[in-house]
Amino acid sequence: MRCSEKVLYVNGNIVTMDAEDRHAEAVLTCGDRIEAVGTAAELRPLAGPAHREVDLQGKTLYPGFIDTHSHIEMYAAWVAYAYCGGTETMQEALDILQHHAGAHPEQPVIMGYGYDDTATRDGRGPTVAELDALFGDRPTVLVHISIHAAYVNTAMFRLMGVDPDKPNDNVEVVCVDGRPTGLVTENMALRALAQLPPVAAADLKQGLLTAMQKYNEQGFTSTIGGGLGLGGIDNAMTLQVLGELEREGKMTVRCHLPFFTTGYRAAKAAGLLESPGSPYVRLHGIKIVTDGSIQAFTAAMMGGYPTRPDVRPECIVSQEDMDAFVYEAHAAGQQVVAHGNGDGAIERVILAVEKAQKRCPRSNPHHLLIHCQTASDSQLERMKAVGLEPSFFVLHVWNWGDRHKAIFLGPERTARIDPCGSAVRLGMPFSLHADTPVLPQMTMQSIHTAVNRISRNGELLGPDQRVSPLEAMRAYTTYAAAMTLDEANRGSIEPGKLADFTLLDRDPRSVAPETIKDTAILSVVSGGRAVWGTLKA
Ligand SMILES: [Zn+2]
Image 1 (cartoon, helix red, strand yellow):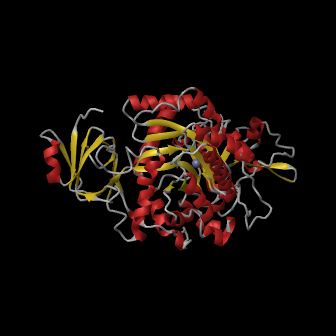
Image 2 (tube, protein in one colour; image 1 turned 90 degrees about the vertical axis):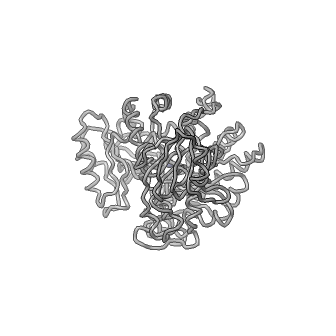
Image 3 (cartoon, helix red, strand yellow; image 1 turned 90 degrees about the horizontal axis):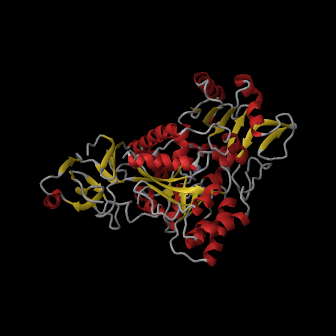
């Protein structure tokens, strides 16, 4: 790109995150790139007479943060529906949903998301009868916070082709006394979501603008997608809308997007995965969902759940299919992005990558194991050997940690969920994520949790899995950049890289660790443009 304008940022605490971990006072950008890093006195002669100067007022400038797992297009499409998370009772969530239904008579399906059953005093979700009583004949789905389960009413069962009055052989349609309860999991939860009317392009566009602003507010300049095609949003439309936004100069988050298994082969055949992409949209790789989620009791745990011996979830992909998908993508030079929560699912992914590497060795493929919450040290070691890198959902320690201990996993396994400390000891790069829309983006809380591992109830869970603030910042910058397969252009503040920055009011590496979460994100620069916050550049 031709340099159009030079901007000199001065009077800052610039944390470059380069290999020598250098700090600087000033950085010079030219168009969308970084030209030089140093002192203001050194850089002014390079800046030329026409440059603009931006005073950072002593604040801390990091490379733009990189989110390594979320579903930005799903989040954008769901802006039209009811967020039912963060409630203390089931009734509160149902009130939100009912209010939404009343306000949107035009929506043929009533949809709420973010419902966290075990965080409510009721500890459960609504039954089919409870939903029928409130919503009658309007098909209704209340999506569990994990997105691996949902609660539906009779009208929705009918749309899904499920007889609401008969026992169902499918384990994903939970039945009690020979009748579906309304709780559906995994593929059946996705089938319920597939009944939502297709989102219109104009709504998706507006939703993406809102979503990107939310990401910018949390410091993000890049994201790795959770699988195009998940959630029933038309891929062609998503790509068309992203293309329009980029042509209009409205993109503020760089999207690195793998295709969900259902769309991968068509995308490959259409040549979409061969193109280098544009500055804001790159299509790469395959997303495979291996199991469910711990807090929906659908993660494939090898030892089962201590509190629920009756529940022994299997992976939702056979080893054979996993091997085939992984080999196909790996041999084609593509990135494998595999979701795995339970150690049984993690094992399945590792085995597949080991086999693929044996048949077709590749160095540094940067395959990703998303969530990777219950990996053992020996599994992490094997991951390192084959270039399979973890993106941990460390916010679980804070948000669900108390419940993992009491309800899902028991104390011993809870102490080592999201084992960032083990990854550091093994010399492995790792990243962190919030899985939006599962949780809203909350970057400083995520960094804080990786460093402190304090649960909502204030309990320290797994002290030996804590990491230094430096490692936690790497998880959102340098380590994450390699996972976007674009570390030559992002992840650190160095000449030649993209001018993507995140401005903080303090350096999380030099404050008391227990105050990291109070760090304010002041501004975000994307490709040399201030796209959010206080900076005018
Ligand atoms: Zn996800």
